[in-house]
Image (tube, rainbow, N blue to C red; front, side):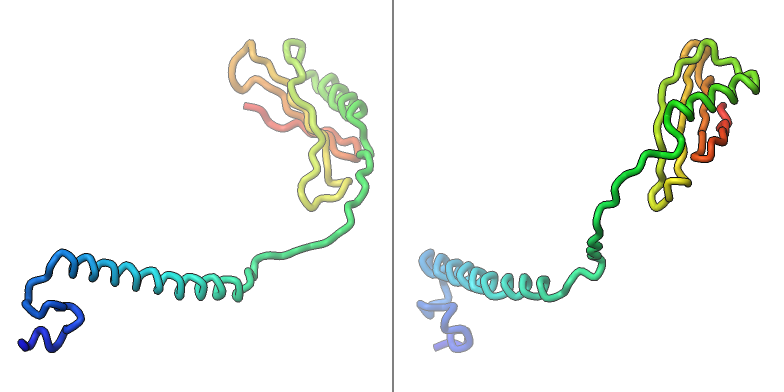
Length: 147
């Protein structure tokens, strides 16, 4: 028996140093079988390890939803305040049209910190020709600068 056969008897089944097709297929089958066993042993362990470590960033807050109250200044009142400001300051909006109006309540803000937003647009004269106004819940108008 030669040295190679003594060191690896399971690899050289015919001890001749030349592998037959059947031996090669057997070796590949053994290798695939070992991979399969390894996969079935390692993957469940990884899954258990992931479940054991809780996600520290997950925060659950249970709270009862608060009923929404109407804003202290209604949409109609805010629009009247904005139009009065426009008239007093002689802002020409004859060719403008009211494109947007919305009530803005920033996240974490109280009702008193909310405001109405109005956007008048004039598409006929080009870019930057618009009027933006805010009316807070105390009835104070504020014109945002336009381009």
